[in-house]
Length: 121
Image (cartoon, rainbow, N blue to C red; front, side):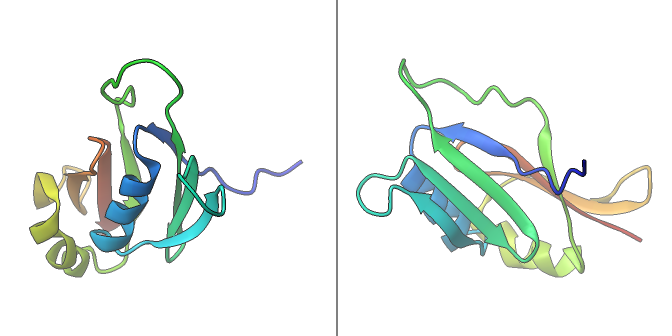
């Protein structure tokens, strides 16, 4: 047996709006959607080798994301990525070098999920 990858699948109240945010603000491409037409209930998004999926939240009132960590994206030339993204997103932590020597920054997406982008020097 072999695990092939791990892809985050997060809930959202607005799959289509979330997909639009990832495409328009973060440079992802829509890799898959369900259903093929009509209101989306699931979307898969990719940028280079990074992939993330979103599904429609089922029932109940709108609530804050339950995710307490961050999705970590390894990147090449994270400084250039920072320059590309920073003007159009909510920045939680600006580009910095952490205690382990990793150059990184953290943003929040349209749902409040944290995305951290980093590059080891």
